[in-house]
Image 1 (cartoon, rainbow, N blue to C red):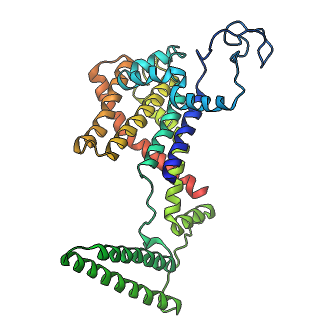
Image 2 (image 1 turned 135 degrees about the vertical axis):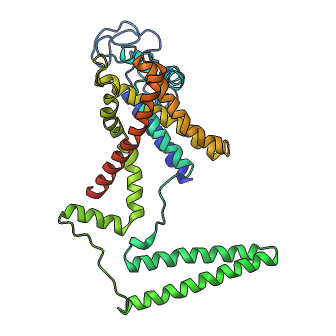
Length: 354
């Protein structure tokens, strides 16, 4: 239940952050009269022409729920105009937004925030998360023995439960063997713990000595609790997901640096819409896998569709031929590997020094 609540919270957070980034347009509900409650300008129409605030403001508890529902589901209707184009004509959407057609579509950063938070919400809902029990070889000896004992105890209890429910002799014999193995492992771990307590086991220091105190401290944190550090890495991956945009910018610029009509702004819009689509697409893939749809073809689609989408977006956004878009898509796919590596390295550095 906590996972579902956390997922819903992340989804709402992403929608409201996206809504906060989205410039308002077409949100009025009829003409208003009198003075603007924000700046005092005489109202003409549904909005103040001076500051942009709506002429009619809500002052009720239900209005809070109304705002949340609008943030999550509507984006004031823009989302439903944007999504079909983002899926099928991404390059046209990119070009139209760059050329100034802004009020009709959700802005790149707004849909980026919404999609990234929604993706991690779905991951949380479907149980995709960092492992809680890692290989304990890198832990301190006492902690390693304790972790191994807890893991073995869980296996023992599980085997005992299944033995009680077994219906035939072959199953009972199998679970009796598992119980015996677990009990033997526990006995061995107890001996190791006793030997360690008497000082009969040699323990080498695993402390890092790089000469850089901040780095040494970070390495020690990873050694002591790698599961916690991986969890922090996962949390940081969506909080700092915006870093994918500036990290990708130089690689896309290289593909068009001699075409002076395309500026860095154009590439940024391309990247932001592209990442938003990938996030939304993998939401669909994750949900389909969670409910048992797809199988082998789903994995194939998860690899093929992003490449096709990038190719179409390149062709439409930069007005190039299919062959040119195809070759650039191949190069960009190679670049994406390096971009993801750089992104992970940045996150690891933040974990080490944070």
